[in-house]
Length: 146
Image (cartoon, rainbow, N blue to C red; front, side):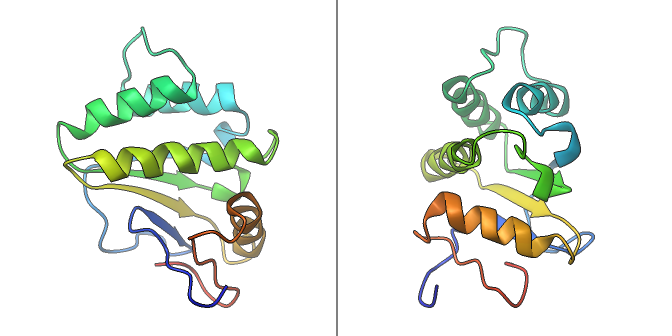
């Protein structure tokens, strides 16, 4: 994975509160977002999404883009190794595609902060590498992405 660059919108860490991410921050527990419907429910609560939120990937892209019109956002996922863990691996990849697409078109910065314990970071890195196929996100084996 040498030579790969991590996109600016993605951070993976074991730090309790890493520095350098835009505020405000909303937090979602990975344990409460093990499935796609549970993730959409957790995001609805955390972001105060409207009742008409369609609870699908396209609708998520739309509401995140709308939210970024109000200013920068950090979406922090604690216990990130559990995020979408009960879904097929491609669902995590789709989430990353959605956030990356929104970040590319947003006027304000967005950060997806995946936080977990040092013991669980290797599994999370493995999942990220598997869904991204090594394409574009550096997931070093010896330390958290920052």
